[in-house]
Length: 465
Image (tube, rainbow, N blue to C red; front, top):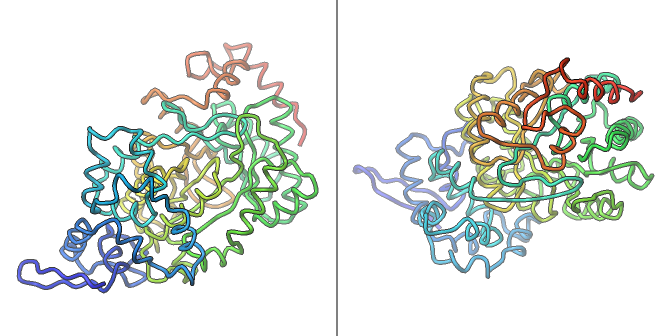
């Protein structure tokens, strides 16, 4: 299908759905690098105009990658729920935007259609939305998951406590875990990116985190973010694996570059479910994504970065994860050049993930060679919290010394919870109050004036790595 439109005496043409989607995307470095971005703001506006008039059913009739060539495309089509799609099946992309923002449509209505939407539909409507539209609709989408606590309840904001260490020194990791817990972080997960993926090292870290959680009866879950094959091997050995982690992407070829496919993810999920370690639910998977990952593997099939990212969410939701996280600025300025692009991408990812029914978090982050700074991250952090983001990262000082990038700090969650009246997961909040880290009013206890807190610090410090 070719798309044509005359504007101000000039003819614009777009050769197919891929081209239309790419040129309708807000400016980002990844699409420029791929040579598929709009050449001007006028061309972008014309593409968005045409996209707004496109029937949603077009995305079912014209897959971006033929399903016989790509298992993600097959998954998208096979999992499409035509009953859920029925209420919006006659709409165009522009009409979907109006429907999602309408006061006459309930939040429950929005949630009901999630399996009727394909990732390409979600990506398309995001391209014609302002930032406030993305925020308003994402806030309407409630996605609740559980393992040892309950994530995603309205009025709650969770955090991943990220205690990475450049040499995986258990004492350094433990110090960061203690620091994070004392600031009320860690209800989404205590998750380590290991410096080395060797099974022996990953197993050692798993036992370290499990000891802390079990000894102190902390209602949370742990994860060592090793490759899924490493985690599978360790589960067979009986290692204490709570959540299975894997980076995923939106095409079969990109996932192949990660060393995975859908069958492998299914095998890992089955093994984790068989372990039976959850107490409040059976959401055992943790996925991370990021715009530009398919392009970096030369596996994007000419599809723009944001649409590829949305397709990764089809992979994620097939496995009912506890957590999904867009590591939005981590890949670097070659893909998201500056703070403005990172902010827009973070809001798009969060919107698409929540609209498709995922428990969506965001690593509000940038690399040191990007045209961005911590003020940009403060802006994105606040916008995401207003949009109902499920969780953010908690990194000591917002500076990950192992991965060498800038993220959000332990203090950032306190800031968001204070100004927006948000609280941790209920079971984790009860624990924080019980051991004296919180004072019973969703605030930190007053340090040395709190005998309860001093006792909690001493008790936690008894763990010997």
